[in-house]
Amino acid sequence: MALEHAILVSLLEQPGSGYELARRFERSIGRFWTATHQQIYRVLKRMESDGLVLAEEIGQDGRPDKRRFTATGPGRDVLAEWLRAPVQPEAVRHELAVKIRGAAFTDDAGRTGLIGEVERYRAEHEALLYTYINGEKRDFPDLDGLDVGQRLQHVVLKGGIAYERMLLDWLDDVLDTLRAL
Amino acid sequence: MALEHAILVSLLEQPGSGYELARRFERSIGRFWTATHQQIYRVLKRMESDGLVLAEEIGQDGRPDKRRFTATGPGRDVLAEWLRAPVQPEAVRHELAVKIRGAAFTDDAGRTGLIGEVERYRAEHEALLYTYINGEKRDFPDLDGLDVGQRLQHVVLKGGIAYERMLLDWLDDVLDTLRAL
DNA sequence: TCTTACTATGCAACGAGTTGCACAGCAACG
DNA sequence: CGTTGCTGTGCAACTCGTTGCATAGTAAGA
Image (cartoon, each protein chain N blue to C red):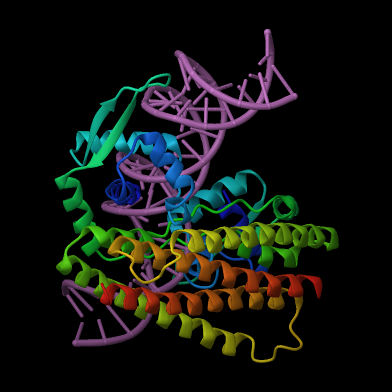
């Protein structure tokens, strides 16, 4: 259960409320770890009772109060311990690959439909690639003079960019194959 | 729940017992969809009662009997319907990326440990890449004269190869960054 | 004014996946 | 003879993640 650790990293980078965390998971962190707000609140509650995070109540005008979370010393320790542990072999769930192999067992209409789906999927990931590239230009305009945290954030972002480029090339290959059947 | 569909694809490619399916999920299919035998038996049971697969008892000498499963007509229909449905946006869970960003909040010893972990991870994926490349040479020596199913299996395998190559390049980038901190 | 969208938190039920264990017989090795 | 490993099937408990819903106030636009 690494959601706990992803939350710790995010809170160490910047303390924030459950709501703010949920928004970060939609954007930056969500590129490599997704979570809904329901999940985040549930885990935050457990982390609070375990002493990994500390909440302070912040009253706001015109809006509901919020609870701003910060990682504690024990929270840092738990994170450090997790960093030392082996990377778990990830559970691969590549739906599109299953569908492509499944295309051998459908008719022409089914294959045409799948080609349309792959095209849509490709367009989505192309847009994502441009989002990443724009984010790189915006957040890392000067590659010298980055601090430790920024250099690490940047190398992770470069991983996302490399993945999307690879995926787009492969999807072109897939489309050629499907069209040539 | 696409495990059902991954099982249908696998059974259409080749009927087999729960045990055989589990072994396939460890190898070929497992490259893009992982599942344990417990999960497979449970889902097979449900699929059987839903009429998506048919079991025939096969007595064996010197071994326990086995139940050989085949996809039925309704099974094919369910698969065809799923192929027409949009590809679900996948839930990204990239533990290593979280750890890399977490490295900003640990000490030198923690970073050294992480570097070792990344190296181990890299070695694993390098071995996987060679497994894929050898599999490609073995199973697709002649790229002309492949049937529909083989061409689709090959393009999926090429995706795995492209992914591993991209990953290795990125991990080298990560290692350079971690070492330079 | 009504609807939509945003901030902010949370519960309840369900479904899927993981982990641990169990049974059963055979084959091969030391 | 005991251990390990393979074939073959399965249950039970647990954790994790998803989906749907609820509350509550503010702000902006049709």
